[in-house]
Amino acid sequence: MKLNVDFSALHQAIAPLGKVAASFSVTRHVNELESIASHLTIGVILGKDIQLDEIDGSHGVLSYHGDQVMLYIPDQGDEIQFILEDGKQGCRIHVAECSTLELMRETGRFDRYKVINRVDGFFPVFGRNFKLKQDIKGEADLGVCKNCLTLLNYQGYSSQGHRVKNQVVNAFSFEQLFSTYSAHFNSLPSNKKKGNYTADWDSISTQLRSELDYTCEQCDVNLTQYTKLLHAHHVNGNKADNGRSNLRALCIDCHKKQPHHSHMRVSNEDVLIINRLRREQHKFDVFDYQQLRDCADTALDGLLQKCQTMGLPQGELGVVINADVNPKPKPKPKPKPGKDNGNRDNNWDNNNWIAIDLCWQKRNVAVLIKSENTARLQRHGWTVFSAFEALNEFERFQAKVR
Ligand SMILES: [Zn+2]
Ligand SMILES: [Zn+2]
Ligand SMILES: [Zn+2]
Image (cartoon, rainbow, N blue to C red; front, side, top):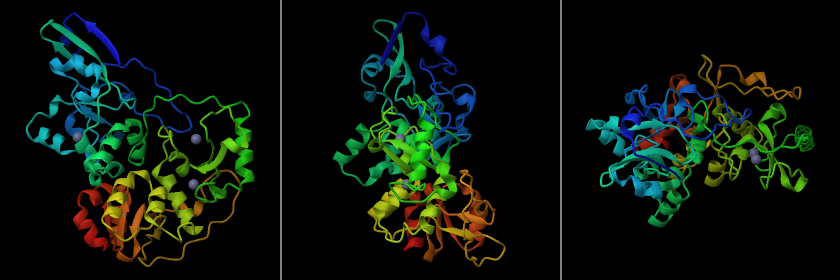
């Protein structure tokens, strides 16, 4: 917590709030993160220039022009001192288009909210101690809105009992939430520093991965065709400890799902490739819900937990259909072994193939994270839901699946 007391007319100084910059630096993982739009620099409250009606909640989580954001009310009134001591007593951070936000929109009080996309858990706040006639500002560790967690079924929140709900809230990390839904967005904000890799790390990593024939030690998928999708991971987190027992070759999907890896962003396209390969390589032949959740894009986890709770038949991952003019699927071309250059094999870069995030093939029901192929799949007789539609309109969805 940082606390600055200012006796001047602070409200005036910070009234626009559009220029309030937080006092910590941004370090990006060059390899793991794509650049984030400059206007969404981490820790800057986005006030003036953003029209709140441009905030989109249609994926469930809130977004602004392709970047994930949160909404909150920085003005904590005369509670400010308590809230600087314990942010969990203050206004909640909204991460989804929850019932509270809807009500605020309807009653015209939506413009009290400010937009931010900071993931370290601290948020700029201000207020006034009326007794002492002091304006006060600082940073508070505000908590996440529980209505938002319910709406997203985040970590199964909506179906949990009181005790587990509290655990989810207490262990909640904004960084982890952003990582969970990264498939929907262009980039992740990050405040993590790149670890201290040894100078010979690249060759150690290459040797380990090639010795294992580019196979993930967790899910067993072979990535000879896509060597860049296999990482070498330090089990104890110490990047200088390159002993074999501290190293694991993991596909980027399994890697991102390791503890303390919520700074990693894995694109939706890469998860689709890995699941297509897992399927081709018969890793999905015996299947249960836990494996489904372990292998699916994390943005689907709220939906999958709901499906599991409601006893829906299991969906399938890695299904790819041919969306050629001829609606009858042709047999899939077999990927040819190619050079070890980490490039995608070209058979699948062909536009005719649509990779489906999650589907119930017998029912022709598909769940897509990205919507661009929705119409094409529908032309082929599929019923298509976005992940959030399926969760939010669960009755309609389950009627199609059962
Ligand atoms: Zn909310
Ligand atoms: Zn894996
Ligand atoms: Zn790692």
